[in-house]
Amino acid sequence: MRTVRTVPKKFLDHMTGTDGLYEIRIEFESNIYRIFCCFDKGNLVVLFNGFQKKSQKTPKKEIEMALKLKDEYFNSKAKK
Image (cartoon, rainbow, N blue to C red; front, side):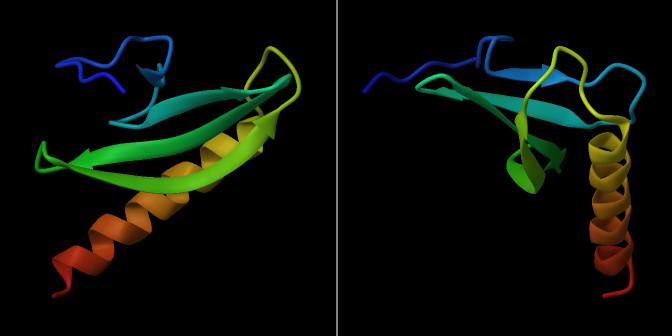
């Protein structure tokens, strides 16, 4: 196990054209998985939907789902 101060872009990267949405990348055996997330107040990482990536391009419906979940998360916090 190793500790690093910053996560390399290979594993965590901002999704261009989105407001604060990031993509976590995981490779296991010959499969590639993606999990969308965002940061809440800089310290808390909130995970949203994940999927197995089968092509170069990230499916638009997965990005739309993540943005919807992100909005629902922050809207529910605002109501408290």
